[in-house]
Image (cartoon, rainbow, N blue to C red; front, top):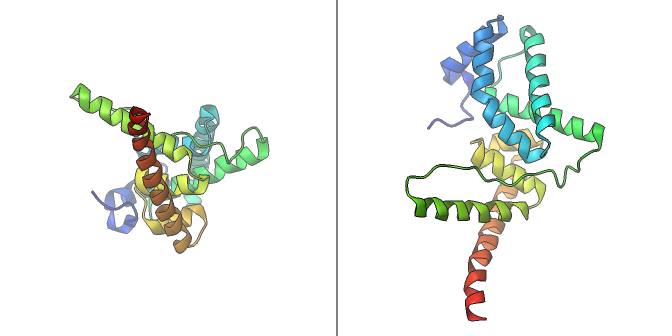
Length: 198
């Protein structure tokens, strides 16, 4: 799998798609929308649980992209550009509306998946549930950094730029979050064993 921080110049399909979009090609625009809509929704839901707000911000983002397409430059990564733009829009909306706290606006990180083996599915679901609950215990910046790094596939450099922090801070967010998750998950796996002995 190719690293998401690869520049558009090294990914000719993205370059061609972006250039076509800038020239007014609606099919290219729709392809960009369809290719990134899912990851934008998932990322938006990490910032706010208000699905209507997320949908509105994504719609506004793409309307603004279309309206200003001729003035846009070529980003290093379409995905990074869209995620950063969406993050800015959501945070701006939340700050303006004051209807939801940014601190508590993050959702659990659990995605449903279909497994062939029922036992494997139950084990995986249980683990993801534990992971989601464990991630809820992390500070918001650590959750955001983990989501960007492991669920959006961004490099540490891109995580730092997107979050507006230096590289060392982004690495520290990720490292500390992973360490905390490991401890939380280890503790939660011991609790059923402790109940057995009580």
